[in-house]
Length: 260
Image (cartoon, rainbow, N blue to C red; front, top):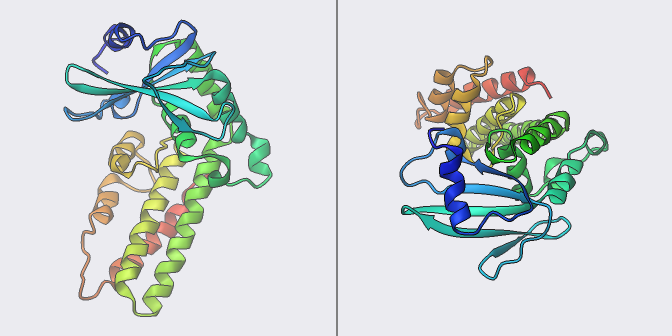
């Protein structure tokens, strides 16, 4: 991250977007990891103790109390910035949803978290703090101690199994086009499980999967091998069965190696 904390905070403060009761603010997404480009938006999360009311803000529903989060959009140096406000109590509620008690009770990720909630937790571990670094460090520790990793890994492994079974059934029925798609889905779910087991979250944003892969360097699958399958290297449309079988074998091998 080349930009200093001041360079991030100043545009927010100049636009009156940092409330007095803010306990933390952090950059999330591609900019937080140095993956952004000239066309990327900047995304900021600000955590407050009290609700922020704004006539220009956009509200989005969340299954929390209160049942919404607000966001503001502005432009700085021709770059689009989106600021999302979370209440401190809302983040506590989300972390409670992925407690070990919830996990052992048999909750699954789709029932426990919405996509917006999961994305918040996924980005918390890789965010760039610009305000309230101590708060961010403490909350990251709570995330590490939670069952979040197990929740998402089990979800991805279950999706892998489903896609493998689909591919096998479709291949047996001679539906090789559908079997190809199912094999690709199985591989992507298996890869997500592998990355999530190493703390690299973000399965809802597949465009960053190669970057996440390079970031954690999993031993179970070298990047070159991953990229060959991702780009369907060696796939023969005239006889796709060997490629499909190889991919499904790799998926099953990954599933065995992944620690829940």
